[in-house]
Image 1 (cartoon, one colour):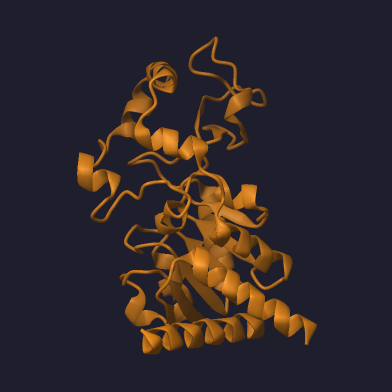
Image 2: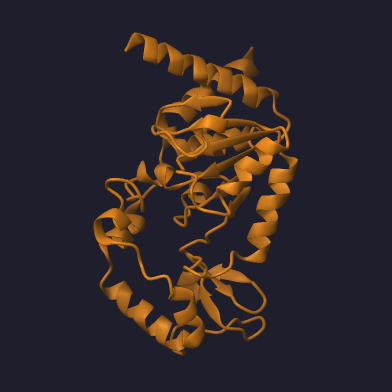
Length: 263
């Protein structure tokens, strides 16, 4: 136990040093980070898809065929939320989210790419965030790409229309089969091309294109730090591996960086 603890402490110390020396550090976060806020993961032994099966893969096709019917069914679902939806609604940012916001405030983390749709990064205080799979609290115009809060959308007419251009609105969350929005994809490639240090936090790293960005960064010479209690597809590529939850490891990294700033 002591040897394992010492290895983890050394990994955290090494990670803090790499972050301090980096010119443009970015991060990719996944469902494991949200799980620390009580949101179930999709994959793994206790994942929603493992227990209940994967959702249909024709969501995007169904929306395109009949947006009004999709919105009607979605509105009915609000009245009968699933356990997963209820978990999303009550979740709060955890220590990992707040530590990443602090890293941004210390100018040690330039950008976060997140696969999570729960809005917890922004609620914790992070500003430079690309939500590659969308945000459950927003809608997006399929014509002009404008986003606005879901809570402000009037549903008297279905489907709701964009106030700027009249295009059809859909929930910002990316559906199965739906292309990643171009603005989000461009943002991810842009920050990946600039980074010299990539943190991979709480993701199984099996879903493309998100999982491709750390690999691309590594191929360009960036260092890779993995923070995850479990081994992933990226473990062998990582320069530093911290086998701990983000809510434990990241606040320790922040503390070391703050100590270095005071020294």
